[in-house]
Amino acid sequence: MLQYNLHFPTIISKHHDKEFANKVLPIAQNILNNNSHKNLSYESTYDQVESITKLKNYRWIDEKIISLANQYCKDNKYNTFPWGFDTNLFVSRMKKGDNHKLHDHPTSCLSGVVYLNTGGEKAQITFETEQIRQWTGFTPIEECLQNRKQITYEVEVGDILMWESWVLHYVPYFENIIRETLVFNVFPRVNYNVEG
Image (cartoon, rainbow, N blue to C red):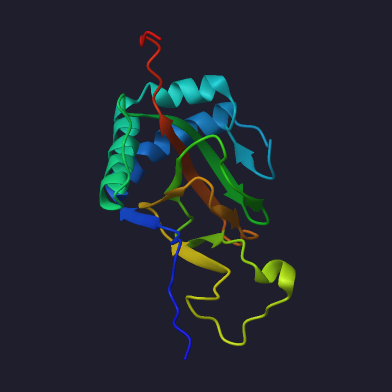
């Protein structure tokens, strides 16, 4: 008889805070209406310094994300950093037919998304793992935890997902009317005053 051990978990946290999402939504919509461009396959303020600065002016948004990141680390027995965390925040808007291809967030340690508006419907995000069967030809005859290649979350307004930034994920072709989100990356804050 073979003994099986499951290793290397992929941890995705889910938190729900509709009040926070509703408070962020008008800020995000204002920024999207005035500053976004379609730099991916949908509207986003990714890499737009002016928009990122506007979001950082709302310190309570930063504080909420950093609080969740600290909780994620505490719950999963990860160390935090001596000077704490910093964030990179941006907002996005998807419309029917948009998608976001498989990607990760390589310059941070945690990433996540706050669902602000889903047009009254549920939205989806899919997480994927790279497993040996992708190049050996293994095909599961029945999906289970041991052979699962991907998992799709159905989310609604107020849901906040967070994961380690190396985890591959994508947004399937979007069928809802609209999907507006606050996207965040969390990374160690740098202390430039350290001598050395």
